[in-house]
Length: 185
Image (cartoon, rainbow, N blue to C red):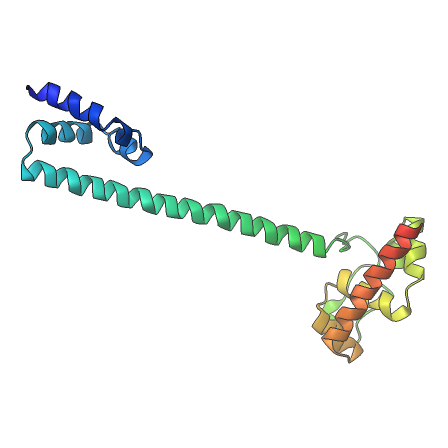
């Protein structure tokens, strides 16, 4: 049997293995394909060892590329989740710096001065305005400090001299009250 027939017979015998993406990619390189043909037609330890080393190197690179691409894929999904979560949490933040000064200013720290007006004064929607008027003064102030002044629950708690858990609870109740009022109208 001549070497060309040996190679053809080998390719027919292991046709399914050559359809595997890794092996297909490895043998797209003409040098690797010629080396395999040399191993089939003249199986020396040098040829076999060289083919083995080249395939191991190729396979290692393929694994690294797959790992990095998977990391990138899942990192981008996580980043998108975090960005959406952040957007959904801070929907009421008003980013217009051209609004006049607020009548409320945090008294404990002057770093939080804002060019915004009070929260109800910024609302043009009558239904939302009337829903805000149904909140207590403290609930309204908590919403204003969180959404206009961008304070954290801990900072708002320091402002009211209360626990952050209590502020979080009042914040949640305020939003629930707004939601129920808006849904009932």
